[in-house]
Length: 66
Ligand SMILES: [Zn+2]
Image (cartoon, rainbow, N blue to C red; front, side, top):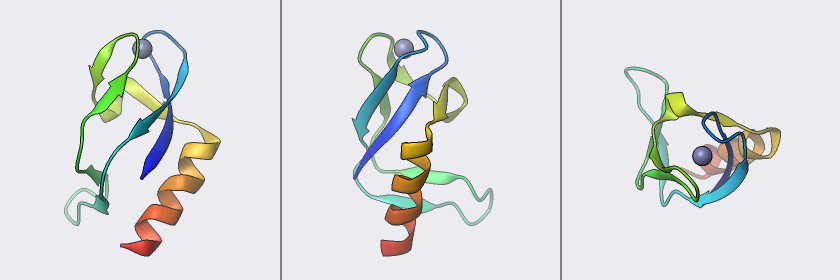
């Protein structure tokens, strides 16, 4: 599943293949199979990126399938 993020470091939007996406039942945060990789900054955590509007609808779609 590809998710669209905005990097807080370089302020650029990018698409990232996240593999399977689930929800962590303890924290209610998304659980990704693969790391978030910004093409400019490298590996990022969830706290270092924003979900774009497109990313949010992709997430909703992904977690509904799960
Ligand atoms: Zn970046």
